[in-house]
Image 1 (cartoon, rainbow, N blue to C red):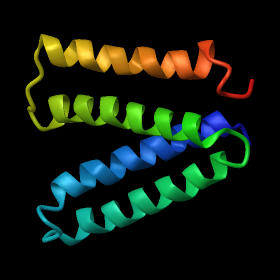
Image 2: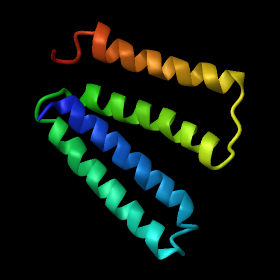
Image 3: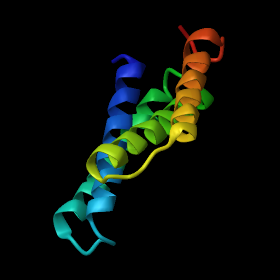
Length: 110
């Protein structure tokens, strides 16, 4: 399977787990608490599969960076978290970094 498809699925699973973590209210709500365990468990499993074909630096940088951007977007949309101009610039720089690592750099295998 395409390692970038697996990495995308890992990122989405992490976003589910992190959103469930917010909704679990300190693990006091059972359904979101199960979502945390399943989301993070699946995320780490899928992440491990990507390491068969991509360098760990590329995988982790991409996973962490897009997780940050995704969680910030979810927080803004679903939880009314605030974001200012500096935050938007920072998130855009993170996205630019992911582009550099995955497209411009020779770190990743093409």
